[in-house]
Length: 145
Image 1 (cartoon, rainbow, N blue to C red):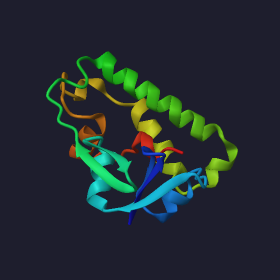
Image 2 (cartoon, one colour):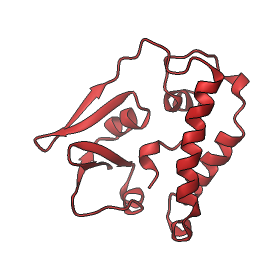
Image 3 (cartoon, rainbow, N blue to C red):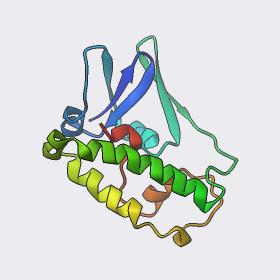
Image 4 (cartoon, rainbow, N blue to C red):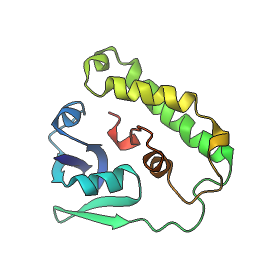
């Protein structure tokens, strides 16, 4: 079972399972909703967005016709922002005991070594969609505590 975590009506975290959910800094004001694995994957790949409406989970597909990444610099900038978020998580000593720690650390290593010549740009796909299509293990920004 997967989870979406909302602050108000807005998504702030996603978790693939109970173990990943337990890694997140949850507070009483957050709303945790059980979701299907297929809905989880849509949001993880950033091909859909979600919000709460009257306590109900709403998932909307994101139709993308314009390129998400025009140039290598666009994609590099996205990766740099991800790495910054990952570094913050990795820098907290108590996070090293969390079950998701090694997955996040491995993903950072992958991002830092990514060969930008291996991707055809511009692309209308999200980075996460590219990873899923190419069997690359990745972490959504919404999974990083």
